[in-house]
Amino acid sequence: MQDDYNIEKIFEQIENDLISSMKRTLWSHKEDEKTKGFNWPQWQALKLKQLEDFRKNNQEIFKNYNQDIKYATKIQMKKQFREGASRTNKQAIKAGKIKKKDSQLSGSFFGLNDRKIKALMKSTTKDINDVKYATLRMANDQYRQIIYKAEVYANTGAKTVQQAIDMATKDFLAKGFNCIEYSNGSRHNIADYCDMAIRTANKRANLMGEGEMRKKLGNPFVYISKHSGACDKCSPWQGRVYIDDVWSGGKKEDGKYPLLSTAIEGGLFHPRCEHGSSTYYPDINEEPKEVTQALNNKHEDEYTQALQRQKRQYERLALGSLLPENVLTYQNKANELQKQIESSKMEDKEDVRQYTPATLVEKLNIDLEDYKPFGKYDPFENNIQEKTSKLLNMNNLPQLVNKEQYKRIDGKEIIRVLHSYHGKTAQEAYENTIRGTIQYSESIRSSYGRGIYFGENDIENDLLSLYGKTDNKVIKAKIDNNAKILEFDKQFDYLKDVEERLNKIPKNLRNFYKNERSLLYMLDGIDGIKIKSKGYYCIYNRGVLIINV
Ligand SMILES: [Zn+2]
Image 1 (spheres, protein in one colour):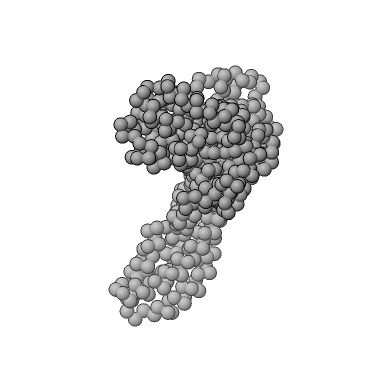
Image 2 (cartoon, rainbow, N blue to C red):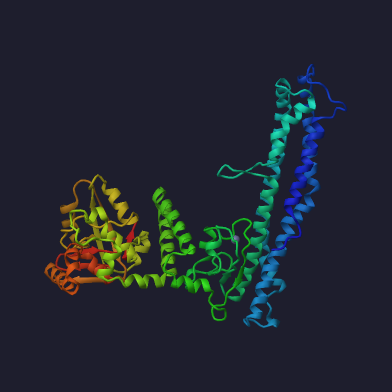
């Protein structure tokens, strides 16, 4: 993005002028004097009197640059908006989407968008004004401090008054007007900060112009340019196609691509970002290499890693937030990101499905000779089934919905009764089931294998009397329609099925899988089983559950 008006230079000039003004006010004597015998209180009183002049003078300095600042903040942004819109319009003509005579760049287009541009300008002007007031305040504060500090330096070794003043101003001059404090406590220089604020605003205006034009053209897809040496913040996001839900009015349902808002939250278009976007026409443009590559990539690329970090962030927010609506919003964000992670690794998932009982044992690094269900390879200690669920992408979190959404989902309700166990309260066990790391029933002797046990709604009373105790918590859930649930009439049928599956695998693996029998079903992509006579469910994949929280 070109900018012929350099706000950084303007603010550097303002900073210089303010410093000169301070220097003039602090020392107006023609000749320097020795500190010894110098009347400091009298000098300080005089300097305080001159503070009012100093203040006025500083305001004048800002006034002198008003026009320049206005140009840099307002006119530039308008220009950027036009530039973005017209570039997008040109691309559409070039792509054959519209004819040149049907150019969308009419006066009414800008008229309609005037209010949006103005709102953007207003917030930038406010930013710049805040900087102005912070700067003026700092000039006053520093001036006051310096006239007292000078006396301190005179008493501790400065020989002349000028020398004492120089020592007193040194720290301030070295740092300059670093009066912008970020929420993390770091301080920023005004020139630096304003430059960043204006560039960011100009970029927004440009993207907004592009977006408004894309809305008109009815195509919300954007391609984020790629350049070498991109910073860490945005390199994971470059070279990809997105649905622009920020400026172009795109929605998740518009296509298979991720949302641009996700990339922006993850760091794309950070201050001073050099990246730009262009319209992507799925039927005309070739799919970028990165998109195709990601689908075939075995290991996580940096894009997926960035999504993972973001997901983790929302998981922490969901865990630590107090208001239920916040928890829900964050949890859904995390789930949405998980879906994006999965769709970015589709091929990878196919590979995972190809585990056989033998390759799974290999992957889990299990020594079959040494394997004992309660020995060295205690299933709970070693989390064999939990590890497997990760390998098979079955460790997703349940989908959490509010009461209204839950009501609208059809499907039978199932319930889980939790009680305090292993030093965990029922509430903690509940939290873990819906938001924590996946954990299956502990005992390998569980009647229907290890899993997350649920029961049909009508056996709620039985379950409560069995597991309720005093401290209990009930989870109500519905099972996703796409879930693969294998149903058995009776427990006997389940055991027979296990036996048959065991007979199909190599002999040396049988002892292991006999004890870890749920793995046999998971390897087949089965999300859970149901024993109809009992009304019991043993769920392997939490991701198929929809829970009302
Ligand atoms: Zn960038």
